[in-house]
Length: 272
Ligand SMILES: CCC/C=C/C(=O)SCCNC(=O)CCNC(=O)[C@H](O)C(C)(C)COP(=O)([O-])OP(=O)([O-])OC[C@H]1O[C@@H](n2cnc3c(N)ncnc32)[C@H](O)[C@@H]1OP(=O)([O-])[O-]
Image (cartoon, rainbow, N blue to C red; front, side, top):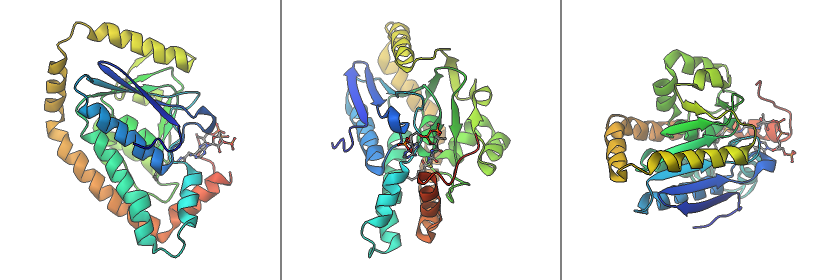
């Protein structure tokens, strides 16, 4: 496994496999290869028989600001002679399919420690987690697909209506509105720790998880997750495939690249 950028750390404290995003200076934005590494770590956690819970943590004030716009610029600039279709099949389709698939197929309990806002593909991955805890009420999820010339990704065309409801999903996606704590509470977030320090929050969640799980018969929880996923797994897998193929057309046309560049030049700002 290649940890290309060093932006992601992991440690195993059985029964927990803890993955931590550790690039707070750039708000834990992730390049294509970082998402690949994250997916590989999920695969490793899935295969490890000592692991029952995969815990996602982050650092600083954001959980993750989504795809790293600089890496999209680089992908655009390299191999200029390569046909756009080939370029975005490898730089977008295969990566998005793989990372989303590793989340949808993950057999262990996925717990997200949401220390701050999550955006784009990273927000989609939070929405794929089984349990989400928030550090405080300042968290939000933003899916700026309509602003960036993209369409739903990371199986959000299934997870958002399922978790938030259909009309709330339309409201957020059509107008690029952040989904704030008041809407996430109870639907996505099941506990708010009311803290203001990410490291204290991460520690508090782990302390509580150790306490809550030490009396459980752990194989049962995997059996329960398997049953809970039976009805939606096919939907998630189908959505993943259709989403990337629709988005591929956007990348070939070139609209997202233009808009990501504007973001990187600070000529475009999301309304929060
Ligand atoms: C795979 C393809 C599909 C994926 C789709 C998606 O994920 S769609 C979602 C795509 N994502 C988005 O649309 C979100 C884009 N980001 C934003 O809209 C804003 O940064 C903000 C609203 C998140 C925070 O505003 P704020 O005023 O509080 O903070 P700030 O702006 O000053 O940022 C602090 C530092 O972090 C840096 N940095 C931040 N994000 C990124 C990034 N994604 N990339 C790289 N760098 C990023 C920023 O440059 C700055 O560094 P500098 O210049 O000081 O060296």
